[in-house]
Amino acid sequence: MLGDVSITDTGNHRDARAPGLAALAGLLADETRAVCLLALLDGRAWTAGELARHAGVAPSTLSEHLGKLVAGGLLAEERQGRHRYVRLADTRVAQLVEDLAVQVAPRPAHRPRTLRAASAGSAMARGRTCYDHLAGRLGIAVTDALTAHGLLSAVSEPGGRTDGAEAGPAAPSAGLSASPESSGSGERATGFLLTEAGLRWFEGSGIALDRATRRPLARACLDWTERRPHLAGAAGAALCRHALDAGWCVRIGSERAVKVTAAGEQALAELLGIDAGTLR
Image (cartoon, rainbow, N blue to C red; front, side, top):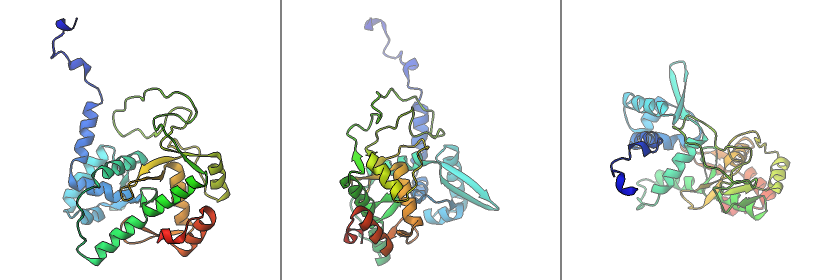
């Protein structure tokens, strides 16, 4: 009976994930560490010195922050000679950072103080990388074109399974050290689904898909400038990698901005019917 249970007798019912969640929140609850994580969304490895200059802090201060992020499983580090390089630990960390950043994006706009700052902001909105896939107006244009051609379809139940099986409860995780982004034999429905026609399109376009990866083949990632989802996952990463390798896009500036080249405009027009005017 409820009358026999003390209201304070709840110690044994605490969720075992609570300490890990609190520790993760603590790692993110620092502006300098947040600056580093956002910078590393470009998918590249940075030296500790580069991040210190970017964050505007002393190298010794930055080193302490990096140590915490590495220990917490958010960053991976490599050492080459006397240089220390860090990158985001995996795609799940990138997704976490990007999803959280979207939540704080709506805020009073600040007028750029310089023409250079205004140009950089415009370039980021036009086209950029979001860790390992395309974002901004470019990412949305590609996603819309793939959908319009029946190569990509929206999934109405993000928590479901694409193989028709009922998804069971996820196993508790102690932190971000484990790397799988999906479990079981079927792919998770995560907002987008690559159709059979889409699979043939990737193959016919010479864009290699990693079918053996445990990450979702297609995933929806909410774009923080366009406020709409763009294509992420293994397919989004393959498309971005091909666009850069084939010279369809080139990186510009020191952040994540990319620019579509003349060759890219022609290729995207031929393959997906994207009007070049929407890419400029």
